[in-house]
Image (cartoon, rainbow, N blue to C red; front, side, top):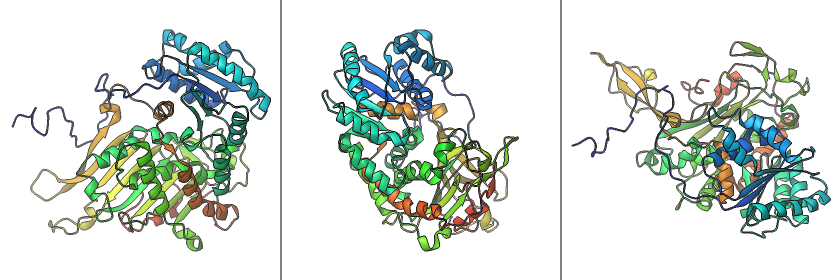
Length: 528
């Protein structure tokens, strides 16, 4: 059979080692399905770090690659008083240092003419009445058809004030095709506050207008989970309790609390990572196939998983949860402080910077299969991944091979630092004896992903403009995750969960007790 016409074409890359080459300069590009309608984007918190580091660089990259409508404009707002040009210059200094080789002055000159600034007080309703005519004038000049997106890049304590003032001033009305509001995490800090915030925002915005952003869901590997599972017949039949031993979901950072002590002291790792990123990854990994690949169907299947999560056994919580806080240590040969020594942190703080927990999905597909989730700061290396470990072989036909030497097959969906998919399996080493070795096939987006790749914020911002809620979190999803974690958080904050902090040194994989969560005597967390 001719290789060019057969099932294995010569262009297919099947590798048995992890490739480390530089990314391709060209490549196949997925065609753009739709360009958003003309719109005005109003960013609350425009003088902040999120706007400068993420939002404007993302919009610039979308503009540079012709993924934005011809008619659009961005209006930044904050308490700081500055001119349009001052705002543009502050943004340029950051955007120009972004993706290597992707900034040029001519493109920025065109893009920046669509950026404006307006100072205001978010708690003052009069400021919103003044904002209305300013926004209307810009909309008319830039032909945005009164389509509006309000982005809340502000501290969570301002979410209710801004949504209320948008509603009371009439700015939440849909005079154009649409008006939307994009809200950053955390959405609430426990079940009660999440319900109150949902109720408050719904006074002025319908659910299909509300986009609760989780940038993790915009990463290519995360998006690819559904395609990988449901578009490949060799994986979906074995994606269940009969063949999968357990699942590990990891999000580890080498960084400490950095300049976020004010927020992190009131949050901790369960609020910061588990309630949103980690449980969303679990839901995507465990969900059933939607009947159609659209936002509503995918969201419903994710919700079914979250409804099926087994509550924590509060009377024996230590068997399902391990908590930690980093102490002094060493990262990449450099000595670093412990959490309690960080600026802005209480010297006696019991805030958790690490957590490892066992979850069970009580449904037909996953009954009895543990999902081990961990997230922590000051880990040995930065890694975010989903590792699906399949069951061990039931019988050894090679008597000379000891059982403990046969590693189980593992499928790894790597999210950070490099987005890739890897599958390990056993082969025979060359020679006369029955010596086995584990090899890996991998697919890397960096190498094979094509010339145009969107990062997580670029993807979710574009989807928000398109009105596609597939990568956003719905009201019920927020409340289900908070319902699961709130009893645990309350137990921790009330001192009913005993832990001696700090209990792991910076640069180590976390508390030793985390290993005991894995039931399997021979299996441990994948090495960090």
